[in-house]
Length: 135
Length: 300
Image (spheres, each protein chain N blue to C red):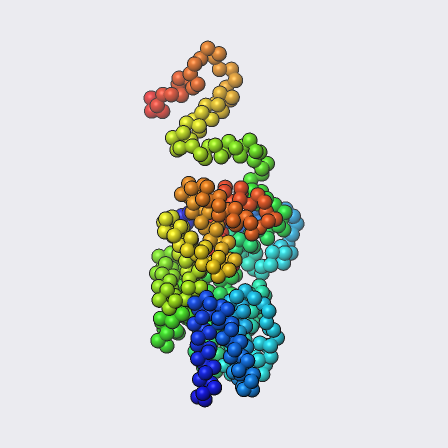
């Protein structure tokens, strides 16, 4: 929530609005009329200079008929029930346990990216990868 | 001043105090009593005055069941008088409450101009504050800041620095600074507003200052303080039926709890916020992932 974070977020929203508007072949005038703001304000919004109320933000989403994730450029499908359950379980863990889960996920991803690993190896990691980087 | 006028002035003052304290029903009753008396006495000036005051009370109550054309008629009949200025400014408030911002600006400009012409100091300050609020709505924080600053300065120059309106303008000015990321300058102004409103017993007016201090403390990453102010803003918003305050409080509290990793508490507020937007059933899920903190204008 620092200032630098703030600038990035505002820019993100403005640039996404511009992309979505152009994607739907709407002029600034047409979109500004639909969401009930002045055209000059919409222009400022697209440049990341304009802050809006919650109602206006959700009106924009309605005009574009978007989900929030799509608005922010997240194109993945909505999470499945299984994924949500995994997320809930993860959130219920301690920080230490979360770290272990992340390490295990990293291991599984590495394992899947190396399908021809030796069958007799007990170690999840290549011994070379365990060496400190400065060696 | 005649005895009748004195009586009605007393009614007006009592009603105004009730309005600031948030006792809207009492304020409305008193203004309606005054209006009835003014009509009985066939005192047109007082009738106009009480008509404007009654409309102001209804706007505060988020009610639109008054005749807006009646205010315009008062303005037309008295273009160069205190009542004309008041009618223009209440018309501006009424249009703002109806989200008719161009009309609101038209009447606010007119009220300010007439006040300047007639030398009505209170009208000038009120007009500057009205225009500041309209600028805030359009996210024009710098021009709003200049308007609120001038309003406050004028009020203080007249020795009214400890009044309800000084607290109001101080909070508005403070919010501009906070929105412009000048939090260190904004917070003392909003704190001053809280102190004054508390001292004056203006409980209903504390909702925005509390919300603003919540917002400022989130920006400063002082989350426990932000939580305290957010909960207070939410309570006041619910008590005085201020939907915008309630929605923004839920949003800020959800963000605070999310940052504090208190997910169940965050979910309570995300869900409460989502209830206001039934067309967006996935709202909670998305807000759990994305912070809108930096693109939100609490006064839009």
